[in-house]
Image (cartoon, rainbow, N blue to C red; front, side, top):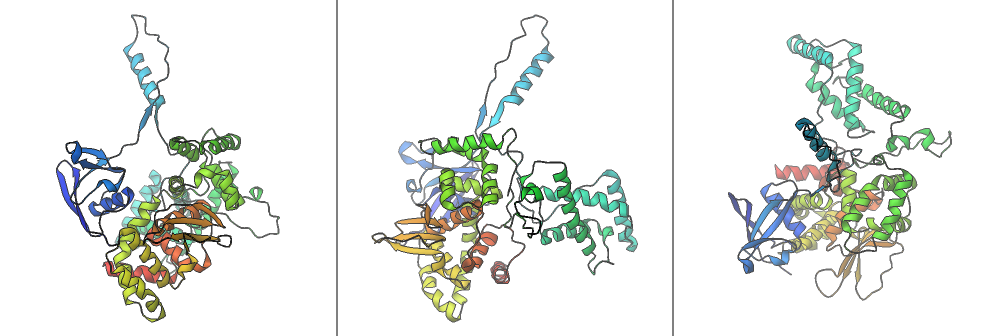
Length: 525
């Protein structure tokens, strides 16, 4: 059903009031509207929306449903600060003496605040907090190394002379390995190349023309072997790091004659195998897991579930990576993960990225360009795309438009929609036993789906996903959360989901997706 364009009055600060035009009407969910506001006004951070209620004297109320909004209504953007929980511990009063020291009192108060101020849902310090940077920043080296590099860069700029000091390389490689490990324990060849390029750009005196035309090859090889040695050193020191332990000989079950298969991040996971939280053991985390089995049966305890799911993240990851459990078994052991809220949280723990917001932002960003490419496509694929292009020319609601664009994207990449979406009528029995990875769309008499579900290994694991586009985003969450492989029949579609929509590991692209990205960026230029 076509929707009417709308305008909203948006207050960002008391002195900044703007108009926001929504050509496809007011989004159906608060999350979609929040994403649209962030995109339109280039906002970032943890913000919320409030709306002006005319029935209460134009007072502002928290927006919980977009059904409250009408054309030309007023929104207010507010910062949403994390809640602070302050726990006051009893303190023995030793200040009865008239000779009490003010300094001692101040010291006691300071100690009380520092020890008792806690934040809800803390990020464990063992977790990595950043994805691999677009531009790798070379760290500062020790004082003497920096002096030598400074003099070397001056000489290089003057007469092109290069540093010939072997002892310098060891210090540089050690510092680079430490910096790389903050992002990943197993850097790819392209990531190592990016580090070397950044190093020689900052310190051109370190080039080695004799090893290759570009002067990069020698440093690439040294850094590659340095990372291997750095990992070995951490293992020997028994640093608690599961992503290293699982690839050590003692952490494997194969015999000495079997090929060595590394278990390491393949899709830019930041916290692929994090260590257990400080003070926790396998036994204590198992007790928390069993508590979660009872918690999911209770009502109004989402906060407690979220805290326990965050605490048991390392245990869950070890189980997923090491054992590759069946979906049915994992559903029985971790039922809390099979909800929209928790799979978004799990994806954020794994990648530090907001799943739905990032996916929808880039899907909407590329939509006009994708429609243009679909319209220009010829041949057999162009004929298949024609009905979708005609549908996209209509004034569709945003959810329906996103669904049509994804259907068109699958066809444009030369893959089949039926491999991703399974359509079923609400009155029919739908057999899911043979479906390994699908999005089930149940249709009725209305234009909108009656239900949209995610199916994995014949199990309907998540229902009521609102629309197929949102289901695609949540499906990416489960692929990451369960460490699943992409279906070969849809490898290009999922590569676009990951590398263009979620912007994860976008350095290395297949030729087909690289060509698509080039066309999209060319149109932006």
